Image 1: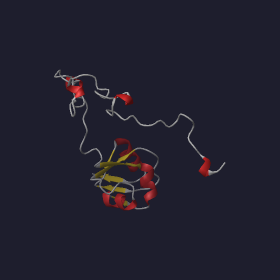
Image 2 (image 1 turned 30 degrees about the vertical axis):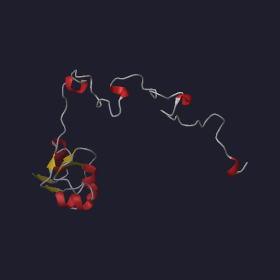
Image 3 (image 1 turned 180 degrees about the vertical axis):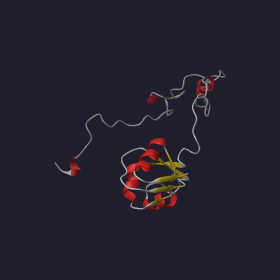
Image 4 (image 1 turned 45 degrees about the horizontal axis):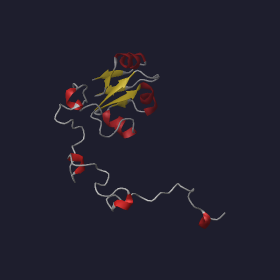
Length: 144
Protein backbone atom coordinates (compact mmCIF):
# COMPACT_ATOMS: atom_id res chain seq x y z
CA UNK A 1 0.00 0.00 0.00
CA UNK A 2 1.22 3.47 -0.90
CA UNK A 3 0.02 6.95 0.00
CA UNK A 4 -1.40 7.46 -3.49
CA UNK A 5 -3.49 4.30 -3.10
CA UNK A 6 -5.28 5.48 0.06
CA UNK A 7 -9.01 6.09 -0.34
CA UNK A 8 -11.83 6.62 2.14
CA UNK A 9 -14.05 3.61 2.91
CA UNK A 10 -16.89 2.94 0.49
CA UNK A 11 -19.91 5.02 1.52
CA UNK A 12 -17.90 7.27 3.86
CA UNK A 13 -17.95 10.27 1.52
CA UNK A 14 -21.36 11.36 0.27
CA UNK A 15 -22.01 14.29 -2.09
CA UNK A 16 -23.42 17.40 -0.42
CA UNK A 17 -27.12 18.17 -0.74
CA UNK A 18 -27.85 20.76 -3.41
CA UNK A 19 -30.93 22.36 -1.91
CA UNK A 20 -33.43 24.16 -4.16
CA UNK A 21 -31.99 22.87 -7.45
CA UNK A 22 -35.07 21.38 -9.11
CA UNK A 23 -37.46 18.49 -8.66
CA UNK A 24 -34.88 15.83 -9.55
CA UNK A 25 -32.68 16.70 -6.58
CA UNK A 26 -35.40 15.68 -4.13
CA UNK A 27 -35.17 19.09 -2.48
CA UNK A 28 -36.69 21.37 -5.13
CA UNK A 29 -39.54 23.88 -4.93
CA UNK A 30 -39.74 24.66 -1.17
CA UNK A 31 -36.21 23.27 -0.63
CA UNK A 32 -37.12 21.25 2.46
CA UNK A 33 -38.54 24.28 4.31
CA UNK A 34 -42.21 23.35 4.11
CA UNK A 35 -44.89 25.85 3.13
CA UNK A 36 -44.96 29.47 4.35
CA UNK A 37 -44.29 30.55 7.91
CA UNK A 38 -41.37 32.37 9.49
CA UNK A 39 -38.93 29.47 9.06
CA UNK A 40 -39.69 29.28 5.33
CA UNK A 41 -38.67 32.90 4.69
CA UNK A 42 -35.14 34.03 3.90
CA UNK A 43 -33.61 35.65 6.96
CA UNK A 44 -36.69 34.73 8.97
CA UNK A 45 -35.81 33.11 12.27
CA UNK A 46 -35.80 34.16 15.91
CA UNK A 47 -32.84 34.94 18.12
CA UNK A 48 -31.30 32.38 20.46
CA UNK A 49 -33.41 31.89 23.58
CA UNK A 50 -36.50 33.52 22.05
CA UNK A 51 -39.70 31.76 23.14
CA UNK A 52 -42.32 33.43 20.98
CA UNK A 53 -42.79 36.41 23.25
CA UNK A 54 -43.03 34.35 26.45
CA UNK A 55 -40.53 35.47 29.11
CA UNK A 56 -37.38 33.48 28.23
CA UNK A 57 -35.90 30.96 30.62
CA UNK A 58 -32.72 32.96 31.25
CA UNK A 59 -34.89 35.90 32.40
CA UNK A 60 -37.34 33.80 34.42
CA UNK A 61 -34.62 32.30 36.62
CA UNK A 62 -33.17 34.33 39.50
CA UNK A 63 -29.67 35.73 39.30
CA UNK A 64 -27.20 34.03 41.62
CA UNK A 65 -23.62 34.41 42.63
CA UNK A 66 -21.08 37.17 42.67
CA UNK A 67 -17.70 37.66 40.99
CA UNK A 68 -15.33 39.65 43.12
CA UNK A 69 -13.38 42.25 41.14
CA UNK A 70 -10.50 42.05 43.64
CA UNK A 71 -10.27 38.25 43.77
CA UNK A 72 -6.95 38.07 41.93
CA UNK A 73 -5.56 41.24 43.55
CA UNK A 74 -4.66 39.48 46.85
CA UNK A 75 -2.16 36.63 46.47
CA UNK A 76 -1.76 33.77 48.96
CA UNK A 77 1.73 32.84 50.15
CA UNK A 78 2.59 29.64 52.04
CA UNK A 79 4.86 29.64 55.09
CA UNK A 80 7.10 27.09 53.36
CA UNK A 81 7.62 29.52 50.44
CA UNK A 82 8.72 32.28 52.85
CA UNK A 83 11.13 29.83 54.50
CA UNK A 84 12.78 29.16 51.12
CA UNK A 85 13.11 32.87 50.21
CA UNK A 86 16.38 33.45 52.08
CA UNK A 87 15.65 37.06 53.09
CA UNK A 88 15.05 38.37 56.61
CA UNK A 89 12.69 41.22 55.72
CA UNK A 90 9.69 40.05 53.67
CA UNK A 91 7.49 42.61 51.92
CA UNK A 92 5.38 42.64 48.74
CA UNK A 93 8.29 43.81 46.58
CA UNK A 94 10.50 40.96 47.83
CA UNK A 95 7.75 38.43 47.12
CA UNK A 96 7.26 39.79 43.59
CA UNK A 97 11.03 39.79 42.99
CA UNK A 98 11.25 36.12 43.99
CA UNK A 99 8.29 35.23 41.76
CA UNK A 100 6.20 33.93 44.68
CA UNK A 101 3.31 36.27 43.89
CA UNK A 102 2.26 37.58 40.46
CA UNK A 103 3.37 41.05 39.38
CA UNK A 104 -0.23 42.31 39.23
CA UNK A 105 -0.92 41.42 42.89
CA UNK A 106 -1.82 44.46 44.98
CA UNK A 107 -1.50 42.68 48.33
CA UNK A 108 -0.37 39.35 49.78
CA UNK A 109 -1.44 37.19 52.72
CA UNK A 110 0.63 34.49 54.37
CA UNK A 111 -1.29 31.32 55.20
CA UNK A 112 -0.38 28.46 57.52
CA UNK A 113 0.86 25.83 55.09
CA UNK A 114 4.19 24.16 55.72
CA UNK A 115 6.75 25.09 58.38
CA UNK A 116 9.07 28.01 59.02
CA UNK A 117 12.34 27.41 60.82
CA UNK A 118 13.94 30.85 60.84
CA UNK A 119 13.08 34.34 62.04
CA UNK A 120 11.62 36.65 59.41
CA UNK A 121 10.12 40.12 59.62
CA UNK A 122 6.86 40.57 57.66
CA UNK A 123 6.21 44.15 56.56
CA UNK A 124 3.08 45.27 54.68
CA UNK A 125 2.01 41.67 54.19
CA UNK A 126 -1.03 40.25 55.97
CA UNK A 127 -0.90 36.93 57.82
CA UNK A 128 -3.55 34.51 59.04
CA UNK A 129 -3.77 33.78 62.78
CA UNK A 130 -2.01 30.44 62.42
CA UNK A 131 0.73 31.86 60.21
CA UNK A 132 1.28 34.79 62.60
CA UNK A 133 1.65 32.36 65.54
CA UNK A 134 4.10 30.17 63.59
CA UNK A 135 6.25 33.17 62.55
CA UNK A 136 6.36 34.53 66.10
CA UNK A 137 7.15 31.05 67.47
CA UNK A 138 10.16 30.93 65.11
CA UNK A 139 11.39 34.28 66.51
CA UNK A 140 10.02 36.52 63.75
CA UNK A 141 7.56 39.40 63.77
CA UNK A 142 4.57 40.61 61.76
CA UNK A 143 3.97 44.31 61.01
CA UNK A 144 0.73 44.84 59.09
